[in-house]
Amino acid sequence: MKKGQLLYEGKAKKIWESEDPGLLIAQFKDDLTAFDAQKRSHATGKGALNCKISAKLFELLQDQGIPTHYVRCLGDNEMVIKRAQMIPIEVVVRNIAAGSLSRRLGIPEGKRLPFALVEFYYKNDELHDPLINDEHALMLDLVPHEGDLEELRRLGREVNVVLKSFFDKANLLLVDFKLEFGRLEDGTIVLADEISPDSCRFWDKESGERLDKDLFRHDLGDVKVAYEEVLRRIQGVMGE
Ligand code: UDP
Image (cartoon, rainbow, N blue to C red):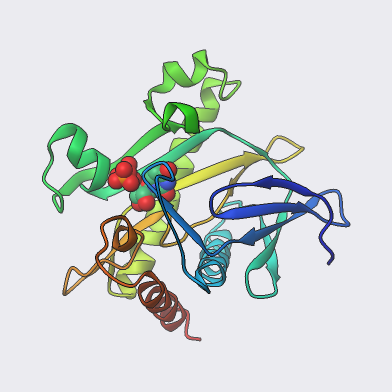
């Protein structure tokens, strides 16, 4: 499948049109950014790792009945995806306190939460992706119906149930993660964007070692080595 016009370039991906109007091509970049892109770097091969990890996780979720935009892999760092209208909400699901939750509410990092916490953030770089509630989302017209927010929350929780038990088998704690959703032409809400160590926190169950973008955020180690390890463990659980 050949790439057409470049539709969008974000911090970690480029989205291209394809020969099929219903399908797009997502190309995963080797760039790393953190803290509103104030910190930047590059890790050759990171894009391919995130592409492979996302593909495996989308396949896993699709097998469990969760609709995604994923169609198939294309080369090392590209995947074919369904064209969808992106919903400008980042859905964050948390099992263990870390990052902005710990900073905002003073919950010690590493504390297990009594239930999976789902949060909505307004995806807007200029405003630095602020935390919002349902009424903000409706006021800003981020979704047309209140029921859509319930659907995002439900899908977030379902994804968490599947991924938490999957990563448990990979000897990793799924601390938290961010999801993005899009709407297909027929109105169906599907999981989109990516699920990778750039958008999740993974801690080794025994050592507590971090195997995610926090390594880059806080200069704690080699991102590529860690992402390779995440892929290796995913493949191990999938019996590959
Ligand atoms: N996250 C993300 N993109 C964002 C913000 C957060 O992928 O723009 C992910 C992040 O990697 C973590 C989870 O969402 O797995 C929760 O992030 P948090 O709100 O704690 O943000 P941070 O600590 O990065 O400020």
